Length: 532
Image (tube, rainbow, N blue to C red; front, side):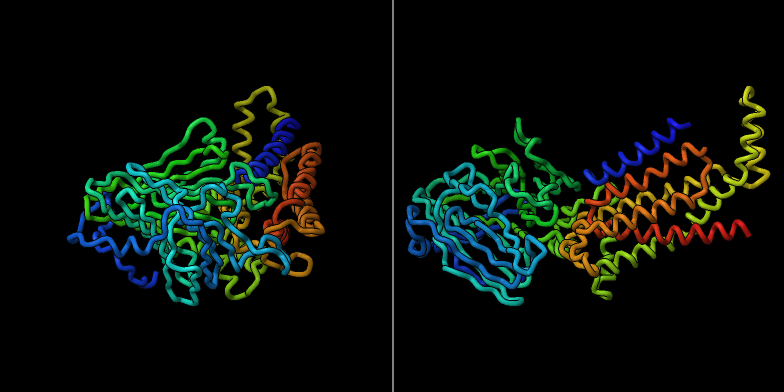
């Protein structure tokens, strides 16, 4: 019996450690070159749409390809982005509403700065014709400012000198993290262009900076109606390629995401590999394009660089909210997260919202837990008689089982009644755990007094200690069929859990603490009810 109790303790600790570790507006029209017609890529085809005309107007807009690269700043109410004429890519994006640390003087979160400096995000390559990601484009502006719900564009032009021209048009909205990217290819040569357009993103294989949000970082994509993720170790020996209904692909950490989204089947595949500089490199390819002489084609895609807020992600479409990976019980965790945000809109404090959800869950499960504790109390009352039966029939197991079942029927006790109701609640508990653990809403969200960040540990360890005390009280009040030695071993659990919770986010500790207090009150009520 002591061995079984010890095994129960070890399994409980293992489960908790396992789950802690595992667990746009109308755009400004840009006139096309006079020789081309623009046709959109859909399901891998490109169809010319109008007769070709003169190309001199486009060539006059472009600086030579050897021109020095320059930076262009795009400023909105949500972010300040810096684009480069090299590759027409994104060098960095500074998020105005998020800071690295929970202090007023902390620096804002800047995405993209730790990627490969040789390849900026969303730099464009091509297969089938010569378009490296290092070519220098000519931008049509030095800076772009977008206010409110306004929409603005930034255009990059590149004339290859080999008979084709590439134009990248970024469309921005002042109140959205979403960006539209249209890549146009104009064929001014006498031979068809056949190939694919590729957008490239890079990410550190190993982070040199210490930040808890980077603990779960990696490559994520939604393909074939499921979320896939890869780390550096997954592509150490060979690249990985996905080509089944790719909706989006990109890099993410615990709280932020940079991704390319398909627009009308404009992503044929996404490949992840380690490049020569040791960075992770994601290559998102369009369907094959065929551009006849004097014709053109256009590939439309959408970009997202911003927070993994479930409402913001869902507004982007393409199942981008799936990037918020909440584990096996995400079907339960996401409604709980929506509920958390709902109450926050009214009470203005995520700590209070957690308490409200805890009370509601406790009320919903009250009939089950009531039945569970009542069954355990009944089992405790008949324990002396069960011991007598075991002693009497210790050499006759069949007779002992028959006598025990008769005792259960006589006292109307179900031996499984104390376990099954608790098992039903496990998915909800773990779902709420994941929702609180990975929710950006709790990041830097204050509660009261010394708790200024519900996503970080309690700096003075007050709540984990109180949680451990309430767990000890709850353990003492819970009816038990174990012998005194086993009971003493189980009383060690509150100590173990207290040390575990010292480093847990204070939002999680708050939930567990409130749940323990409610359980103690419920147990007092049941004990009185059964006694009466």
